[in-house]
Image 1 (cartoon, rainbow, N blue to C red):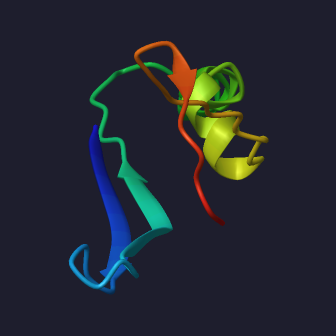
Image 2 (cartoon, one colour):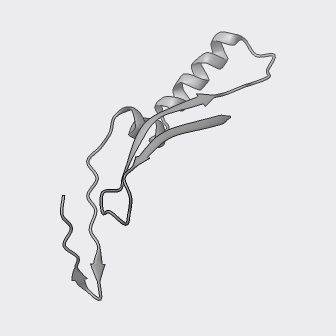
Image 3 (tube, one colour):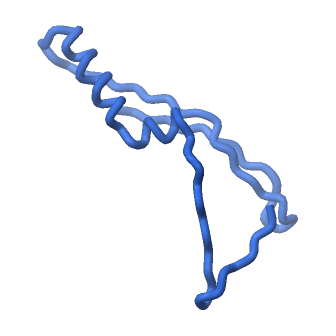
Length: 78
């Protein structure tokens, strides 16, 4: 399995305008087997449907993040 992620980063930390964006992901699965190709295809399909990471990429979820310093919440601007 080879997984290639593409992302872009813009801005600068010094200027306070740094940002990152996930662009896409490519996966390449190379198998060797004497099994029937339709059986292998079914197994791979089921494995992808059961993969939490593939689900998160295909169906983005809400991310709830919080940060505290010495027990106090840090305020962030959007």
